Length: 109
Image (cartoon, rainbow, N blue to C red):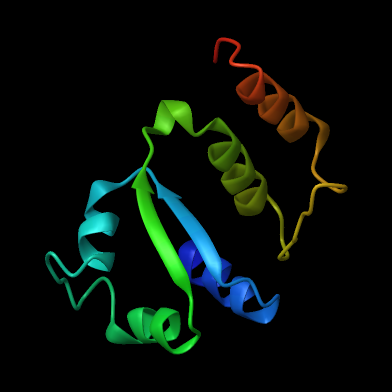
């Protein structure tokens, strides 16, 4: 959840208002859609940040197997000792490979 909050804060900082949030945990979708609440896991400030910033967002469930790029980048983030922000020019080569495979509809391994 911290990564999700950090990503939304980054969107606000970069003036990005239309966002598609892909998560591999269905409970997150329920929490963000107010279908159920777990105050011990997600507080109201997260939802307020999204609303106050004028962010339009949709939340999509993606199976972990279909979300290799996110999994790879999360592992890179866990291994690094500082925050790193990538854009399309600075992505690691393996991340670019995953994007090309996905774009071309090639099998995922």
